[in-house]
Structure formats: C-alpha cells, structure tokens
Length: 435
Image 1 (spheres, helix red, strand yellow):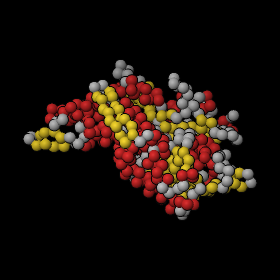
Image 2 (image 1 turned 45 degrees about the horizontal axis):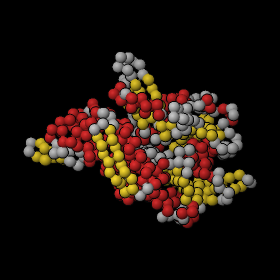
Image 3 (image 1 turned 180 degrees about the vertical axis):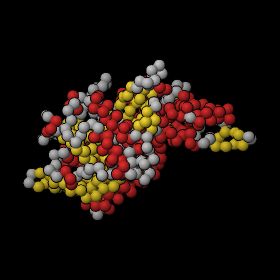
Image 4 (image 1 turned 120 degrees about the vertical axis):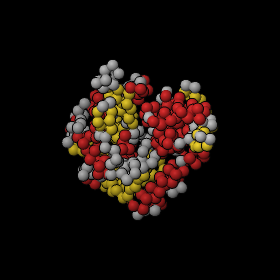
C-alpha cells in the first residue's frame, strides 16, 4: 500500500489512542507499537518529561506506556501528563509550565502525536495527505468550547504534515466499523464510552446498488465516563482509610479533615504534585493532631512514596472483575499500606448512580434528537471499556430488546471506522473541518 492510497483514522482518546489504516478494499488495519511485552495497538494517551538533576537543560520526552514506565521509575524528576484531552475545550487552560518551558494544549498534543509516530511500526513512516480524526459529541469539562478544541486539534495535527484534516464524531466512526456486519437496512444507535466522555449517535444504514448508504439522524453526549467511575471507587474505598471524613483537634475544638486533600485522587498522576504543595505541609502537621493519626500517616506515605499508579491498577482490577462477577475483592498493597475488602456489584452501582443518570439522560436526548422511539432502533452497538459495566448495559436493556444489543471491539472500533469512512464518496456528510 502506498501512502496516497491509504485512508488514515486516528482515535485520540482520553485514556488510549488508536490509529488505523484502510486501503480501497478489505478491513482496516490497526497500527501497532512494538513493546517488550508484545505489539500494542492501544497506545496510552500520556506524556512524560524528564530532566536529570545533573543536566537540567536536557529533556527526555516519552509517550504511551514508555511515559508511564519513566514516571514510575523516577517520579521525583519526571513530569507526567495523562488524560490531557479533557482540557481541549477548556478556555481556562492556556498553558502549563513543564521543566521551565511553556506548553499550550496544541503543543502537548503535537508532541504526543510525533512521539506516537516515532514508536509506531514502519507503516506510519509515510503518511497520507488526509486524516480523519475522531472527536467527542460533547467535549469534557464545564462549558466546553467546541471551536476552541477543534482549532487546537487543527494546529497539532497540521504539525505532522497533513494537508487535509477532517473530524468525525467518535460514535459515528464506531458505527462505520459495525456496519460491515449488517446484511439488511437498519437504524442503529451507537454508544461510545471513553475515559472522559460518553457519546451517542443514531444512524440509518441502507443498501443501495450493492453499497451501504448511511444517514445521520441524531446525536448526544455527556462529559462523564470511566474515569468518573474510578474516582467513585477511590472515594468510597480508599480515601476514608486515608483520613477523609475523619477529624483533628485544634485549640480544643474537633474539626473535620479538609476534603480538598482528596480531590486529586480523581487523577493518580496528580498525586505526585501534592508533595511540594502547601496542602502537603498541612497534612504532615495533621499527623500530630488527628483523632485517627494512623489514617493520615497512610495519606502521607501514599503521597511521599507516589503510590498513585499502584492505586489506579487496583481500582481497574476491581472494576473489571465487577463487570463479570456479582462481588469482588478490592486489594491495594503498597509499602506498609494494605487495604482490602469485598465489594458487591450493587454497592458499586450505587456509588456511580449520579453518572449513570447523566448517561441515561444522554441516551434519551439522542433518541429525542432523532425523533425516534426506542422501538424504532433496530440495532444497538456499544463500544469502549465502560460499555462492559453491567449497570451501563442495563440502561440499554431497559429500552431495547436484548437481541438488538451488541458489544465488542471496545478499543479498535472507532479508529477502524474512521479509516473505513475515508472510502466514502461524499465525506462532507460525515465529517467537518475546524472553523
């Protein structure tokens, strides 16, 4: 395959980024990244910046799993950034300082994309002129600015040399992937559950002269997904053991431990930043004043020893097990800290009830946007890691017949669908340009 004949799709996700290539015929092919544990196709959306103390002007930048490896190896001297997609549409995020240099969002994204290309297999050496990039229906964050996000994307992707940059809704990309399996006309609802957003599109697929014709009918999205589920687990299982909800003594009064100390547990990579903060000095002082000092000692150790990644892994294991079983054991062991306990699926579902309600409302909004009742939907395709959570599936099972619902290709469907979309004769019906 020559670069000119290829269609390229990129699913830049909050948690993972996936790249796919498609020729004029046949299935899309995922770009892989050779690693010690085997070839990867889901590339973690993360960056690390390292400056050796003895050579502070030097910088080593890594991305994906190599960024995590660098950070875990030397957290004190490494700046780690993940889930930065959540800032794309935030006007309040202007720039960040990293080892004495300023990085805007587009700088972070272009740095990430260039590193991703460098780690990739030989198939990414020559790129086609056009790329189709996935975008959420609703960008994450409060009052997201869609035009700002797309302008930032445009700058970053243009730095890779693309002459034409098109954007398509992520669930529409997934719909193109699943449409290969359709052997009849169908109205399809696609739900894409990422790390930061949950997005929905309704599309009508019809066969015409041997080809599949597709018409977009409705869409909706909400800025909550798997990352919010993770935080609920930490907030209920871990933070109380580290002092949240407990008290301390001050001038003869019993006062609550400030909840703000635990807000950074929503993002494990942010915990390391607390070690040099004013809050950290306050937390150390609380060990002497706390009613339950052993809990605050655990908090200090967690922050000092940078246990964030181990905590993230423990939470992920629990969530995955609860997607299969009615109960699972949560276990977090690091240093002198050992936390364990049984969690029932129904308990977890109670924790994430606010997020489930928002997702449910977004599904109904997509149906309303299409002007359709649930009975008019012929197939439901769910993709993304959180689509495996039974409570998420329950939202669809209450609205649609079980035989209509399908999950699968949780990580590859969007990128592959975007690449396949590049074969369409009239891309303007499915894509848009920035601005």
